[in-house]
Length: 216
Ligand code: SAH
Ligand code: DHB
Ligand code: MG
Image (tube, rainbow, N blue to C red; front, top):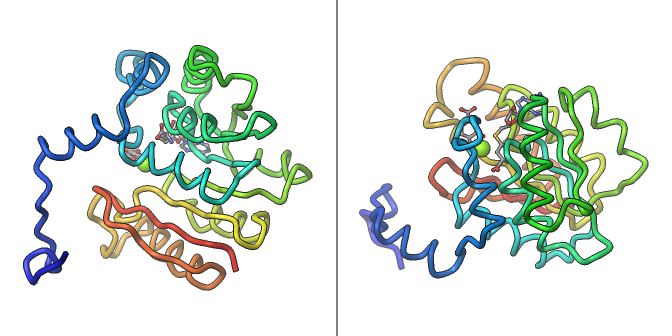
């Protein structure tokens, strides 16, 4: 259902409604709760929300993914959702710049029971992603790291995803700054436009926008 108000940006979802839906459809067990608590581990609390995490898991199942690439691990919360949606012989490679974040994530992934299905690769993703190219083509690439490099991650995905594979990009509204005249905003707009050139695309209106794209 849509009406003029909601088409113009009004939202019917209050915080209580959003929380009720997250609790109903995307409840946390101990493993998810530990990975969600980035703040408790001394990391910034910038992981995706529970409903977005569950959406990532469902998308992984919908396209029958066996090989996933994530750019931006943090404490491993989105990685737990995606890795749990993989078949037993599937694998997720997750790229993380910060050694402390990578260490916390490895601990959380082990606690969540999927440590053997995930490789956390430390370093700046643009320097390290070449190391897994021989494992491709991949089924899903989830981009959630430094925003200025999104166009590079999108180009990598266009090259290394199989036809029908998914590119997913968080923070596609760039915290509300997407239309500004900054280098970061230009980069995020280039990510949208590049994605459109190589994929069948949409930008879902999650709190900060989620680009969802199928490789042509
Ligand atoms: N996907 C995670 C959240 C990621 S937050 C989740 O939803 O649970 C963004 C992460 O990207 C941070 O941990 C940050 O250290 C990392 N990052 C920033 N620049 C990076 C780079 N160049 N390469 C790899 N990771 C990077
Ligand atoms: C930040 C990064 C993210 O990926 C996010 O979803 C929210 C915030 C950040 O760097 O501040
Ligand atoms: Mg994000």
